[in-house]
Structure formats: structure tokens, C-alpha cells
Image (cartoon, rainbow, N blue to C red; front, side):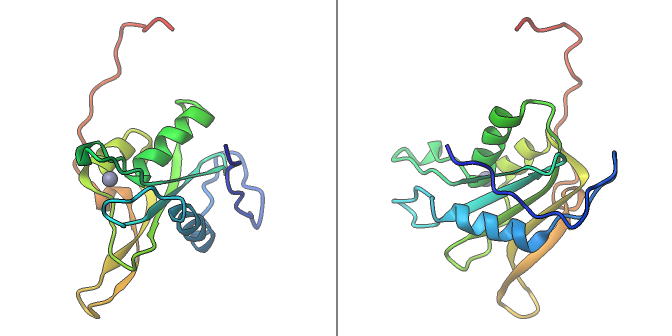
Length: 163
Ligand code: ZN
């Protein structure tokens, strides 16, 4: 297993202080992750890089399957890896998505709902988007609240779960 990509920080954040993400480094990490995509069916190679509140960055790529519906997007693969490596209390500061196909690739609906468990409305989301003005694919930077304003939520269970 690879170590998480380290993102240089210009200054140590004070306790509780939210640092703006280094968007260029995060997008570069997502692009590097896309090179590891398993995409023999679509050829669409996507990478995601998740910046945690701790400063750690976790990356992953999409993993396709011959049974197409079982394909896992890069965003969900990265989130599952983040929970496995950093535990269920993690908080996401930013998510960058990139692809090697020079195409628009905003997170799909399923990934938005899954990311909602660990994102705040202020979490930054970076992805390539087709510009209506120029007709070209350009980097887009928005908040998670803008990307997905109506999440499906359940209150946490009041019954302690063993384990
Ligand atoms: Zn997705």
C-alpha cells in the first residue's frame, strides 16, 4: 500500500483553524492517482484526492468491473481507503477529482451522497467542468453545499452497536 501523498503546508494551522487547501497540489495528487485507474471497458481514467482535516491526503482511482454496475468511482474508492486508514471520525476539508481524458467529471450522484457522510457544506470540491461560456473543460471549485444541497440524512442510532 502506498503512503498518502504529503501536501506541503505553508504554516502549521492553529488548533481548530481551517487552512485553505493547496488546490494545485491536491489536483496533482488526483491526476497522479488517475494513472492507476482500472478502466479496461470505458477507458475513462479518474483519480480522486481527499484532503482530511488532519492534513493527510488519501488518493484512489476508479475500478471498473465486467459487470458494469459494480464499477467503483475514484471518489468512493478514496473515501473507503480514507476510513480504513484514518478511522471513522475523519473530516474532509477538500476533494479533488481529475481524469486523464480531458473530460468533465463532476462527482456522480452516488459519490455525492457517500461523501456527504464526511463533508461539511464548506468542504471544497474541485473537478473539471465544461464551461458554458468557453465550451472547454476548465477546473471548477465549489463548496460541497453548492454541489449537493439536499443530502439524505439519518440521525445516528441511539442504540450502541457492539464492536
Ligand atoms: Zn461516482
